[in-house]
Length: 154
Image (tube, rainbow, N blue to C red; front, top):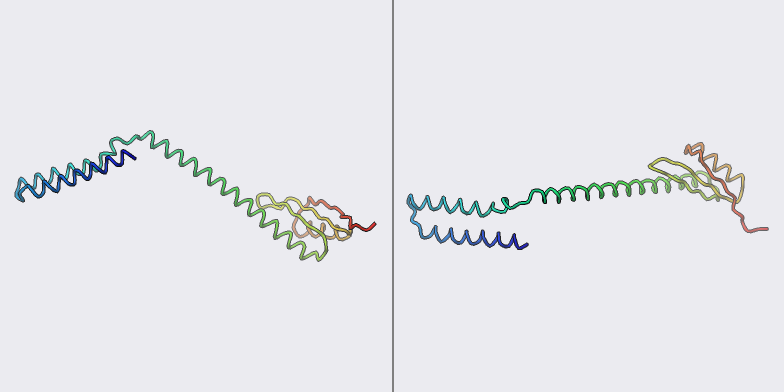
């Protein structure tokens, strides 16, 4: 921050000096030469930070930023995959429950946009089999775990 402050002070000082010189020097030929020198001095002061620029340090900053951006992109892509899988799972589960018209509970597992497995649980073995067959037929899921829930009646 101190480097920027000293640069701004230098630019302001040269600008003030050039304004004073422009007011003092006559407008004829020597005045034009003086104005040219003042303009060159002003240009040199403005671009002077470039000569002190550490390109290796700048290169390091750029590679750090590039690495952080790639990490951020990977994280956001993974998050998008997870969200997509969750959406697919929710919609397929809702579809199955709507089509089956049973009291069974269905859970679907999706990995990278592909339906992997499902689990069906219910109180009736026939309903569970019916829902499992429908999942296999309509969704193409081969790996289905079936379970019966105890309804509490003994």
